[in-house]
Length: 195
Image 1 (cartoon, one colour):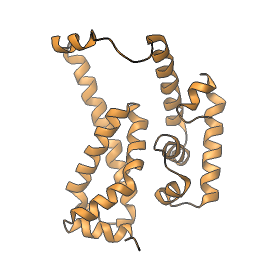
Image 2: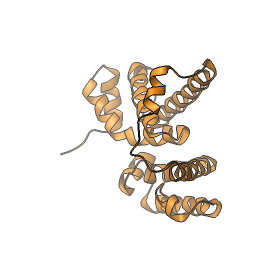
Image 3: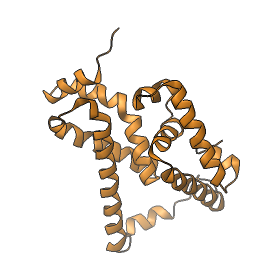
Image 4: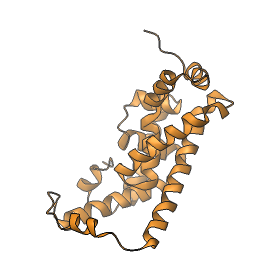
């Protein structure tokens, strides 16, 4: 079965075809998720923001005048959504204490790992994410798609429009840069894709 090109799907989406846009969403959802996860560091928030990004994209798809720029346009929407979410969180933190119903939920015993392990994992994850954010964009996207988005090499090549050799080079150099600066335990770092 032949699959339609992104350009054709974008044109159909611009005419209001929901099915065409859903296909585009399936093709690019991990790219968007990886991008917002890099900015937020929170899987649940990244899922919510990914949905927000696609809703915004659907509402404004008619404004996209060059279909070949769809992925970069989508990533710009993702970046803006993450910035806006950061601003909302900042305002929420300044607005005051939590409500009493949230306090009750905090008292329920958790099945999560002990607080010290959770803290060490969070610190390592934060360090890996901070280091990922400092990588040049081409390394950051390739490494994020592979280890955060869970894409295989073929899917990343398609997302980024690069050859297998180029991808292997980007992943190898990107991971080498991360390993060079990493200070948390290798076993913990491996949980976040750095081996």
